[in-house]
Length: 76
Image (tube, rainbow, N blue to C red):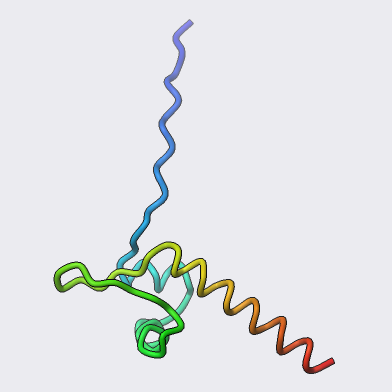
């Protein structure tokens, strides 16, 4: 009986292009850049390419969750 090799898991990415961050966050390009300019979403530059670290995406999502929880708490 032949055994099928189990594929290696793809390593998590550490940096995402703006277009990838747009898909991950379900946001338009202009909103992504607005969040970067305001300091709410961190990014780095590699040459001419702007990249968003995976940790920055995670931190931004946590910020949105925290803000939502705060707003719901104030409305109560």
